[in-house]
Length: 291
Image (cartoon, rainbow, N blue to C red; front, side, top):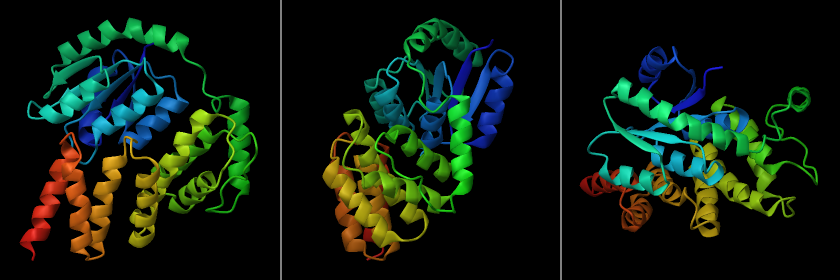
């Protein structure tokens, strides 16, 4: 059976052209951003990842970091523009396996995929199956979901799979079901006892996702509360600078440019200087120009 590849990009026309180029050899799974990419890696057996880090609306480097934190052996090919020097440097810090300059040379891309797939097969054989992937469990979860009212989180249990619950929340975001996502993430941050200590990072990430959800719903003050809680609790998390940037954006939306400037300057002054810093600098310049 052909290998299954995950392409991370948020530009649909590009994705379609990729499918035409690769479909003859592989099964191509699409992800329109980092959230969907991590969810699909959790639920499907992906053998290789191709990530485009050139688009500013998708932080490909952050997506790669999140992938590496859970899938340290899956091969990753990075696509980049020649000017993406800082982002490429960050991506390489996560031990990506290959880099290809845009526009894509498909012969080179296919050659790199074929070179890396043997390593992918070895990684797949060493990987533990995901707890939520069995047909019986999936059917039970769908039945339980159908019985819940919209926005109602699944009932908590002492042996709950925190990882699976977290990705259920991400799935709800992908489906634009913010009430469901908020309910799931709020149920996670209330937990005090965990079956696995390694799951604690999902409680931190749930704070960040709640900030995202409430901002998307226009509840900027509430969003800020979750972002600030996340920053205080997880200063070394990969999404730390994202939270600072989003706080700046929220305060701009609230017409509080003074506070926005405080957080944007923190983004700029937090090394390394990357695409977050570039966005923060542009926003800060806009604020200062408007004075």
